[in-house]
Image (cartoon, rainbow over all chains, first blue to last red; front, top):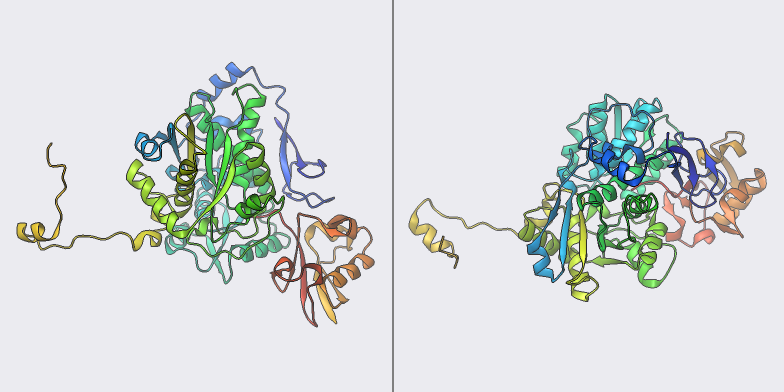
Length: 412
Length: 90
């Protein structure tokens, strides 16, 4: 098995591959460590990947399993779409949208949960759980249902109705906590010490986080085993952002990819921007904030991997920016109008930050950029309710002519 | 003032498996000092050079002490101080 241990990111202490996430010596986060020395040469690895299943499991050599137990629902292999219209609008060389809304529960969280639920089964857990801002709730409830495990899903009580309904339908025990996400997370951290459950983003977090690497692998494979010049990715806890960088690095080290890491650009909402603030202030740690933004899936005021996200952005000469709620809605519209992809608020944040980077000249006509769309617009309909209107007519030609303006593009 | 300090699962090997302990304290810092005095080895686990390690969160009544006055945050009779790992979630 290529995964050999859990290793502390702070003090490098090693632990066996069990359900733990915190270093007992320094409280630092644990991460899966691999021994890739038995893998083949790069050309052989590329061929093996290309012959794999159409899911994240084509990258199983880089995921923490010997023999993965089947779980019933697989994630990944989502489209990478080149948008000439968005590139033209922004004055950027190439814009590629990684559309991870095309996952089973319509967000990138299917990847991390696919890995975590398989690990929960392997370790003998019968109950999975999570603290969620919504997308993770959908994924945990669905993957637990498919795997035949019981589940508890904890969400802030003010979550979007779409995300509540699309979680409850899978038959989970859905717990609405009176508080914000950071309160939910604290409660789950406490509960994980009291119950023998697999909290995917608490005691199984080292494995869960590995699932995000597949968003690096897949993009690289879809670009013909090449790297983009820039990536733009939302930052909530900072885990996804950090792990995409980690995935590219793993393949660079193994020679599957050549070149250097892209510039990593993080995207936050101004109403919850502890990482962007620390980046702007030149700080190494993030001061927690109380979130107030329409981008609820990014509303983590106390980001667990904030320090690592800062490190990645600085090391790759990238950035971490924040945008207003108004810019988020503009971002949702821009992506929809140029690519035909309807993204949720987090994708609005990401697209708005891409537009900002292009305006600032940080990304230009000679650059290839990949933008990560992490969720589906149908999950956050309230965000766009006020900016969409209809022409209301009687079913007559006269009423139509009176009410609806004519387009200037009449000729077929 | 009697304050309850809640011990995370990761530190219970040092507390004889106790999940909470009651101490007399007027601030979070005093409450933690009292806990360090009671259980050997606990101070080194969660502090470094006299400061809380960066992956340790401390709460009073569910509120992160960084929203208050850090270790100087006052505590009163019946308050709960909770120590937790910071690396969960997201």
